[in-house]
Length: 132
Image (cartoon, rainbow, N blue to C red; front, side, top):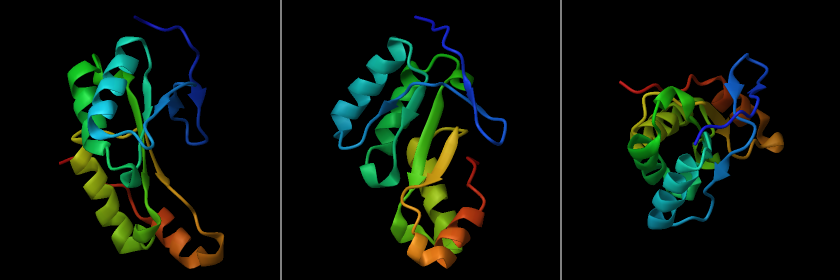
């Protein structure tokens, strides 16, 4: 199934589908099935997070069912325990490895901490890891 939904343009010029599937609190088997079904029915944005514990299943479903990989926009998030520059580098590398994908659409700070601005800014400045 193809969709004709317009894409949204983020502030950095990256285009994203306007509607996606989030897999928060979804177990491994449920995640694999839900993402596979979502992709089969036309979803092109999948949202997960390190804290969700299902990045590997999201990546597996995308690899198995994503069709043209360039069409699937995957968002994941850095958890607050990794909100420092060095640990953000490790956290993003861990997410990329678990997902097993060559690109991420969007990498977010899961919970920016306004009372910990130094940590938040340090994590934000860390470059996102890329697949090797």
